Amino acid sequence: MGKSDFLEEVRLPNIEEAPCVTHVGPPVMRRLFYSGFDVQWRGYMDREVIAAHADYVLKETNFPELGARRQGKVRDVYDQGDRLVLVATDRYSAFDRNLALIPFKGQLLTAIARFWFEKTRDIIQNHLLANPDQNVIVAKKCTVLPVEVVPRAYITGVTGTSLWTKYQQGARDFGNFTLPEGLKKNQKLDRTVLTPTTKSDVHDEQITPRHIVERGIIAKDIWEEIEKVSLALFARGQEVAASRGLILVDTKYEFGLDAEKKLTLIDEVHTPDSSRYWQMGSYEERFANGEEPEYFDKEFLRLWFKAHCDPYKDKVIPEAPLEKRVELAYRYVQICEQLTGTAFAADFTTPIAERIRKNLAQFMR
Ligand SMILES: Nc1ncnc2c1ncn2[C@@H]1O[C@H](COP(=O)(O)OP(=O)(O)O)[C@@H](O)[C@H]1O
Ligand SMILES: [Mg+2]
Image (cartoon, rainbow, N blue to C red; front, side, top):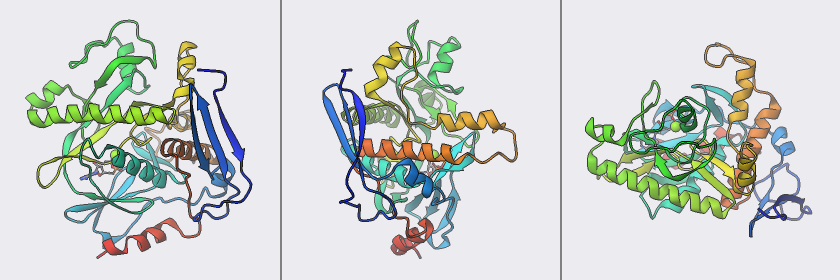
C-alpha cells in the first residue's frame, strides 16, 4: 500500500443530473487510488440524500395477480409455475427477524445480483430471465438442492457457524480440509475452502461433502459439479472484486436443477447479504496491526440491537435509529457503485410498490 492510497470525494458542479434522480444535489465523483490502480465512479447519494428519503422503503408487497406469494426473510416470492417473481424488499434480516427497513437495499441487492449473474454466465447457467424493475428479478423456477455452498478464502466471523469461532474452540479437521495451527482472525487461507450447510427451515447445519453424498442428499456426480462450479464462481468473484479494489472474503451459493435437470445457479450471487466484502487497500496494514478490516456488512446494526434489547427473545424490539439505517444504506450504495462502476440512482417520485405494479404489468394475470 503506497502513500497515494486514499478515497477522494469531489462534488462536481451541478451539470449532469442522472435522468431518474430527483431531489438530489450535484453528483459526487468518487476516486479510490491505491497500489497501482485507480477506481473511479460517479455517485449521487450521500448520507443527507439518503436521510431525506429514509422512508422511501419497501416493506412488503401483495400482488395476488403475480401468483401465490411466499415471504422469505428478504424477498417476496411469487410462484408462476415455471417462473418465480422475486421481489427484493428493503427488509434487513438478522436473528431470524426483520430488524429494520434500509432505504434502497432491495434495489441495490437486485443490481448487484444482476451484475454478477452476467459476469458468471460463462461458468454456469443461472435463473435470471428478466429484470423488469429495479427491485425485481424474474427467474426460472428450479428444484432447489438442499445444500448451501459456502466458499471462504479467509478465516473470520463471530457467529457460532463461522470458521473463526470454530477454530478458536479448537477445531482443525473440517472433514474436507484441515487448518494449520497459529492462524489469526481475518488471515487469508492457503486455498479456498468449501463449508456446505444443509438448507433447513429451522437452522442451517454444517455438513461435510462426504456426508452429502453418502446420505444421498445430493448425487455424487451433481455434487462434484457443484464443487467445481463453486470454486470457479468464487475465483471469478475474487478476480472481478479485486479489479475494483475489493476482497471477496466469503459467500454463499444456492443451486437448483431446471426442467432439463441441468445444474443452475439460483437465488442471489455475491450480494452483500450473501457475501462478505473488505476493502483491499487497507486490509494488509489493518491485519498487521490486529485491526478489523474495512467492511460493508451489517454487523454494526446487529451490535446495536444486541446492546439495546434481546433480539432472540423480546417480542417487541426498539426501532433502529435513523442514523444507523442511513449508514447501512450508504454502505450498500458504496459497495454497489464501487463494484459495478455505475452510479446508483433512485426515482423518488413514485412509491416503490406502485412502480413495481406498473413495470410488472406483463407478468400479471
Ligand atoms: N430459481 C429458483 N427456484 C426455486 N427457488 C428459488 C429460486 N431462486 C431463489 N429461490 C428461493 O427463493 C427464496 C428467496 O427469498 P429469501 O428472502 O432469500 O428467502 P429465505 O428466507 O428462504 O432466505 C429462497 O428461499 C430461495 O431458496
Ligand atoms: Mg435467502
